[in-house]
Image 1 (tube, rainbow, N blue to C red):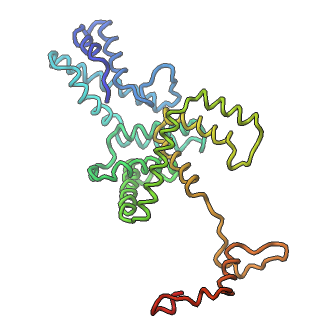
Image 2: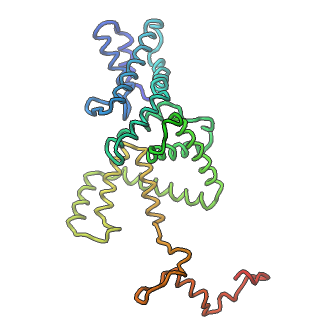
Image 3: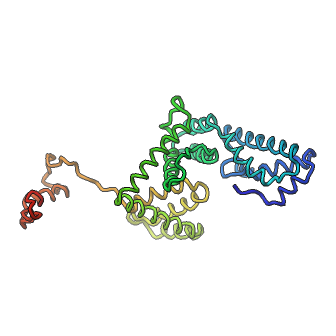
Length: 322
């Protein structure tokens, strides 16, 4: 948590907070302290969700009452030190289980893939993090942060799977946190999976580093040149890649959690493109005269024919393993 400048905090503490000017400074300080990416935002960022407006009002009211009580009972106590304690307590109190469940249900009620749903899901993710209600029984394990990232990505993508009639939202979230912790631990124990994950993480870090260094104005210029130069093959179209870069660079500033999940998805497509596989029983599928056999069928025919007698070579003392 980053506090406002000490001068502002000291000024509020030295003023008569019961006057109109003191009240204005106190509310200004509260807004500065509580302002996050999704809650208590600037007036330039309108809030379209009634539940978010309600949460913002509760956050301000709760912290205001705490500070008033503090100024009355302990006028000489450091206000900065009090804010370090009171602000996290305010988030934990306001973002209780019923409020988080309401945020999740509100996101479910919005049309899939719509901008309002994306905003509601971003609000939900930030509320979950501010609430500090993620299970921390294993927070000292090295894989804990990675499991949290996977869990929040799962909440963002699979919110429709949550059933409010069965359990509060955080029970569902912490259930999946336990699942992802087990998966990450299993991955750590598998050398092949560990190498695979390491390659993904290194590639994602390189992409993120490059995107942070790229200037949006330069990307738009290259995009214009790519469009003017004419179309190319769809999978390597530079215009599509540049659009991705422009969009992802903006997402990294606005929604870092969502950007991380998208970067991993992009890395998987770049490193491990999907391969079309023929069915295992394609030996029973008739092949027309004008259609060449599939690659798997050609391999099967080659092994059966064994033109170079390679299948006759076997491991020493194991004739059954060629």
